[in-house]
Image (cartoon, rainbow, N blue to C red; front, side, top):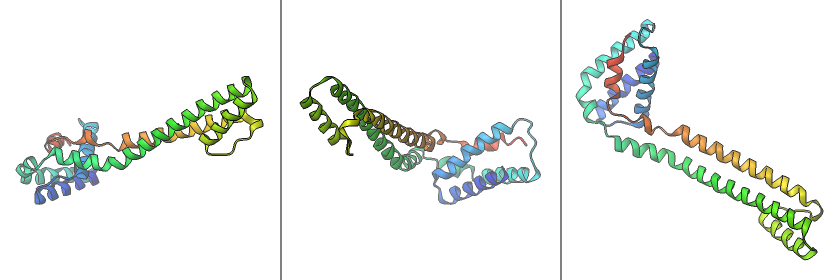
Length: 191
């Protein structure tokens, strides 16, 4: 915790000298506030943490007006959005792949039904279309295996989509962009 306190103190000094907040500092400040709220009240801390807290309180008192006046949530939101853009694109791509795999699986089930219940020409036409949509070679005497194979492809694509979606959601830090975090941190330094 003392390392995070020191880093946030350095962040405050950089913000005070530049007059501009940056996203990483905001995220660290939010995380520090959460940590402090977990420890207080009455939590015991080391002497290093107490010294780091005192140092942070001093730096905040010296730069309070600059820190309060230079906060701009729209700039931080734009930076957070820009960082998420590649993850959003990957998530959308994975969503389309999952939808295509689900569509292929449904078509494979239809072809299997045609294969069992229709004539030779309908069977060949359906198999030809399935081969064309699948993008890999399908043997005509193993049509039931294609339903299972496309089901596996569908599950793999859904898994990739879920992972991409989870990466997107876990990387979102927009909820951590709040004014007055440093003031709240200093006010809650109870140790």
